[in-house]
Length: 104
Image (cartoon, rainbow, N blue to C red; front, side, top):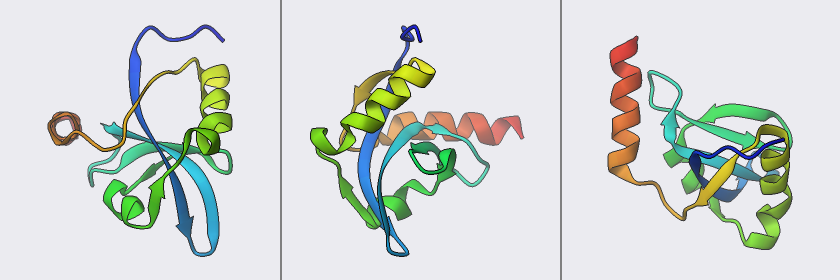
């Protein structure tokens, strides 16, 4: 798939919830719900939404080696062009959050 020209912010984390561990890509500035959840993607389950702060509390940053397969999958399937981050930018998050809240 052709790579997108838009740079998507992403944070790759190793999430462990209820005994299941997997690398998850969080799109920390793409609010998807009225509650403020952000978009995320994982091999198992594909696209979804997540409470970013809860997931961060139950996870750790993924290493390049740990996230390389997920990154490649997302680039090949959807054409993502990533800007890899380590933490969420609060101002960017709030801008997206207020946009979602005002459209409902």
